[in-house]
Length: 184
Image 1: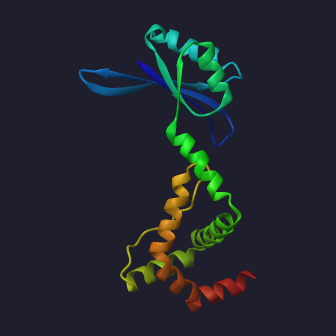
Image 2 (image 1 turned 120 degrees about the vertical axis):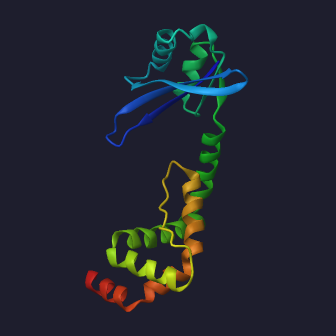
Image 3 (image 1 turned 90 degrees about the vertical axis):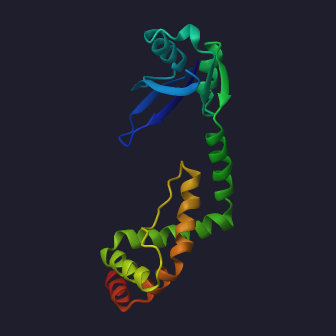
């Protein structure tokens, strides 16, 4: 058996720890969330130990996949559980470094500001939908990226390019130009 352990923060800024157990049953990989509980401090090893003991799987767990957080590495070393770094987390860290490059960062910020504006102005959404129909483009909503998910930046940019002709047409629409003048 193996586990994945992830410390995360809710929108209310409460800290949680989720432990998921992974195993093979009749040749099929299965997983079960054992527990999501408030993370009470830096004693992650004790919290993981407590959860594994509670579910009587402590002696069966041989490895854990976790992010690159130092507290997780220390916890697993303390518990003598083999640590396997999460590839998706490592990839996200690498992509975030690339996204922070000045030229990419500036360009993404401009794309982001257009999308934020289009999502926040009701008439912009209406006009965009009209232009999508007129230009025979898929009627997709714009995607706004999320910092902790590198692929959301990719999806935001991909959607922006897909919808660029409709975005250009919408921005030039007199109804939005009037709206923009009112906001100044």
